[in-house]
Length: 296
Image (cartoon, rainbow, N blue to C red):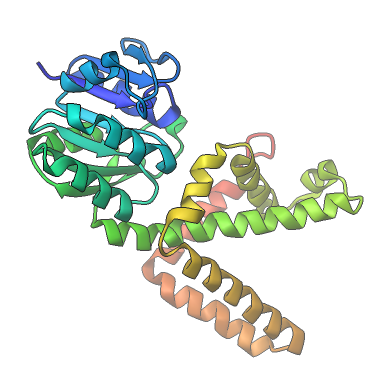
């Protein structure tokens, strides 16, 4: 019988995959609290110090998905590796893939298991439909293909790439983006500390600022572990933040010396590198900015 175990199945990402896998057969969540997803069975326990019930659940599964923060996922996978069935799929959903794929492969080798990395590039509450999922086939096989087919059937855009390419790309997609918003948030916090009124900022905000505030609030109210792993674990994160800082210093220099032509060149370079994507991106921005403020 096909059976899936989601370690961390009571969390947002874990619940996303638990609900997805119900279509292929029974799903068991292993977590510190019961899963809330309808139809998903729960084994309450810490996979880092697995009980007999946790190990029995993993022995019965042909797909095991670790949907945990990085500092927990590898430890939990190592503690449970001996219970993984030969030929089963050992998958993980981490934001940084190169190290995780290496560690999971080492754990899976002696069990003859498949290994796959999956990184949903969206908040779990949004669901798979219409959203991208990065997929890394490490030790490929039929269960990996089945799981990726399930993700695609749920409406996600599955983008396959290597673990290293994933981390290089997400350093731009996530590290630089989040770092820029956190720096922006620091400017806002400093303004408020100096007597500024956050309600006034929201009330007066033009669409770009309001959008940046909304994205910053999404991060500040989110799971710190998720955003920390992105900034601290990606091997290309430091270079991305350095490039961000260098870009800001370059802008500051242009403005400080009154180099209007250099500023125009900067915009031209960005426009050129966006290539054919720029018009569609401007259209997307226009639709976003056209939302009524109480919907934005």
